[in-house]
Amino acid sequence: MTDYKIITDVEALKQKSEPIDTNTDYPEDMDAVLSCFPPTALGLAAPQIGIFKRLIVVRLSHGTFVLVNPEIKNSDSKCPSVESCLSLPNIKRRITRSLNTEVQSDVVIKVSANGPYWMYEDIREKTMSLFSQDAFVVQHEYDHLEGILITDHPPYENKKATDKKLKRTQKIANARLVKANKNTHNTSTNSKKISCKQAAKLKQLKKDDKRERKASKKRVEIQERYRAMREGSI
Ligand SMILES: [Zn+2]
Image (cartoon, rainbow, N blue to C red; front, top):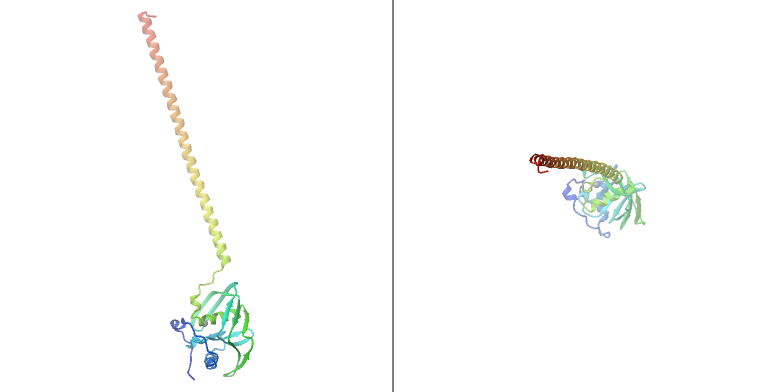
């Protein structure tokens, strides 16, 4: 039997795996994947050992299973999942996963370790409804069949926290806007005050000018009258 080991070549891991013909060679691929499955790991996909076929092994809360040609249906409800990967040593990532997953496979085999050997049990029920951690494990391994790694997922974003932050930012921006408008209003009031003052000054100047002209006219009239008196014309 070929000696398989877990590969860490990211470029190789990004290729999509081929469906398995369940009439032919999947038991050999299954043995190969199980031979590389660490006792503490939660899952391993065939492409992680260089077999680009659609087979995964998952350790779930109700047992360890080999799933051949799995297809998944994810729920809309999302939640954070902190994950690491045997193919990406020293990387931990908090990503978004669906809380529930329904997985349907062509073959489901329950396995249990018996020393260096694995015991196999065929399961008739090909569909599993999984929740939380179990759902995350299957989604993670299914991703490997599609050539997707945890580093391809955007980091988890807490929408509630983001909305709260956004609201706070908007509140600050609005407060600034109100302050800015107030300042503008004050400035225009000031300029209005200045123009009123100027208008009053102008009015006063006009008034003074009118009075001066009237007084000057009066002076001329008096002078005319005195001259007439002197000349005896009045
Ligand atoms: Zn992985």
